Image 1 (tube, rainbow, N blue to C red):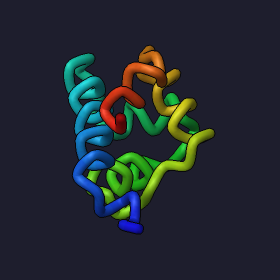
Image 2 (image 1 turned 45 degrees about the vertical axis):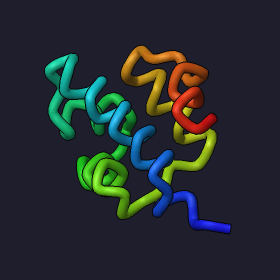
Image 3 (image 1 turned 180 degrees about the horizontal axis):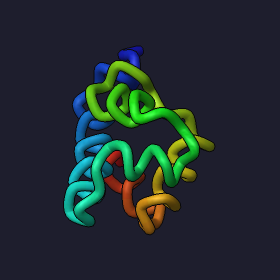
Image 4 (image 1 turned 90 degrees about the horizontal axis):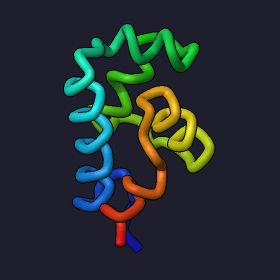
Length: 76
């Protein structure tokens, strides 16, 4: 089984989140503030140095005003 963080599908999910952030004109620091995390958290997620678990993923989507189900479509 391939590690999720290295899979092309996970990369597309992270890219979807990054594009949503950038499309809203948010910096990594802006999003990190919404999440209550240091900006390095967002940077590590977007460079796939750190993997989001399911709970974190839903919070990330909520902070961006996204429906988590839409992102899961990238994984199917």
